[in-house]
Length: 564
Image (tube, rainbow, N blue to C red):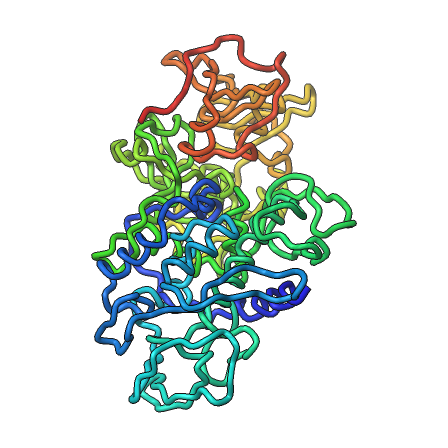
């Protein structure tokens, strides 16, 4: 149980934002906070061998703190006690004689079934150890380092931290820098002697990553690196969607996959690997750094391991999909990318961040469409010290118009549906008049209480929403539905609103994509195989809407699948 107690301490330290050493930098690489890395990549232990890790370090980062070769940073050639895993009988980690960093990382990678590239990215993210910028270097005389994983008060050296000469124990120092990737965040002063040393830090950090990935799925035992007693530790990290247990003997609870990071951002956990990275570092910025470091080129100072996803595709997501890459979120529409320019606009359309998908090569090849920069028609909103406005069409132009109190009441609005918009996102153009109308503006959802039909109001027509499946897949909220006025009912009928284009449907174990032809007739396309659905297009079952076979559109089109 000593190992579990150690991990609890590690997590308590890791939630401190001071631990995030690498600043977030501009990148054209995609970042999806809901899906940081897929499980296939996270668990790919064959990505690098011990010898290839050493060669990669020597070739690309010759001055690295952990390079096996001697370098100008005063590193005489890094070696570290060989990690041999946890001993249940001895209740401790065991270590052999010194080996290269490649061998140590390969051993830990195989022990916990974690990609060595993930381990290297983690230690770089935490302290820039791979690139050699850890900041704590040996002064003369340079010892051959390190010694063993057992601290000794006799081994003390003078090292420079931030230009200040300081005495450090050898366990807090190695040939190139301070070593704290799973425990503590600086030397000296914060050194926890029982958890110091490169090899022990590798063990602790890898155990924490593996534990978080498994527990996010509710798996309590039997995974790589599991030891008797681990199942009794209550996991308090992010959970994937489904019924999950957090501890042996605990109740099975349904989790929707949502998680709020320590910097206040709510994300949806798509897989166990994403949960694990948030469990290790519960900040958006730290995990953005992880993805950038993993994917970015070595020439830019990153590690150059390629995509955090095991597969990609030249197939674009279907029309109606929300995708992200290059730090922007787009709506795929008419075979083009329409940029949603700010989060207030995103919220006004009722979009959910959990439905934003990692962009594919196919998406990046789409042409650029129009920017979606205005709040959605019918949005009722306010900002700092402003009246309540409504987005409406004035002579065919979408503008904000002040909503009178009498109209606010007569049109049935309630405060819970009034959106707050930060001042910098408030539309600039304001109608010269105040809205005193008795008809709801375009975009409003209304219900005809005489027959129970729900409509979306257009500029000159009303559009019947064809039942709960159409209502739900389009992201509408029942709290935003207001009673129709006589003026609303008198509008002529326009086209009906059916299932949302691009929606993934799950019916009797089969997956489909909703599409429309040029005459606005709905049809479905079977989607598969699973590798295309999950690994290449980055869907999860949480993106699929469950529907009865009897409610599926009758027209079935061609298979929607991925191209290489």
